[in-house]
Length: 244
Image (cartoon, rainbow, N blue to C red; front, side):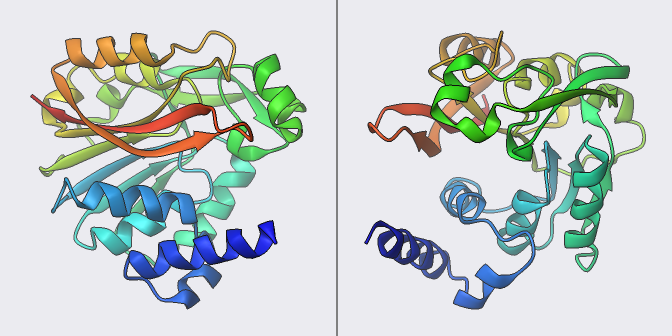
């Protein structure tokens, strides 16, 4: 019965978002990304550029190309094998450029934890809490990946307002923002996932991230997605901010 409810909810998300049921069969299709972008569209009618930090297999980029067809999307994914899937899934969408590297507060090389559950891969180690709540995240291997500051890429990536910086980098969002001091002048919206419980060792939680982003000159619009535990505790939220 629970499976039937989940299927019904999935179909409802796609139909409410104005996407056909067959969209679920596309490579890289994501209910979560579709729902988040559907909610973002209420607040952001137009985007000309999207920076997709933590692209994984292209779930967000593919959904974004539906909601903002005129936006050029720059997708960053550091894991080599996942990056190849990202390329494969987005190869037919002309407005998506892909980069096999991480974004952070410095340029060079970065110790990175490739998780067996690739969505949980991060520059930070998975916390014991997350291992307990999501057992498939318990196994990870440390590798080295290339990393760049967004500021170092600024001369090669033309910023065309309005611009959204989306970050799904598993607790590393603050480091991405530290490496974007100059780029933030050209960014109109921030979208990122923040935690209320430590899902990664050393990650800044909601209060710290909210105050940090406020100090950078962005105001909170509101939540556009969330993750709940089986006990209905809200663990994480996708938050949308706009330049003040």
